[in-house]
Image 1: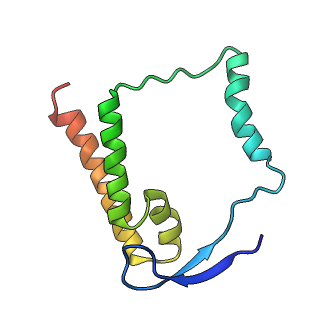
Image 2: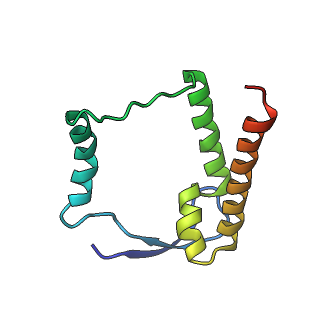
Length: 117
């Protein structure tokens, strides 16, 4: 598929922005098949990964809600700003990514060094 170029005003924004819309359509879908089969093969081989989440449903739902608020407030997700925004030279994306990183570093520092375990 060919990319589509659009100038549009996004919901919640005042000014129009240039957007490049590129649908993700893997040609032969090998990567998708690999991602789906890898865990199955690992389990068959007796090397499955056991995931243990040390949070309750309330914490998980609260975290998801806060991520949604942050995504809306920042005008995009961390990956969108960090990968796409910075690569196209968006000052807003650089500022957002630096903010995400600083908040992450501060959270880990507080959790590991200031909060009694």
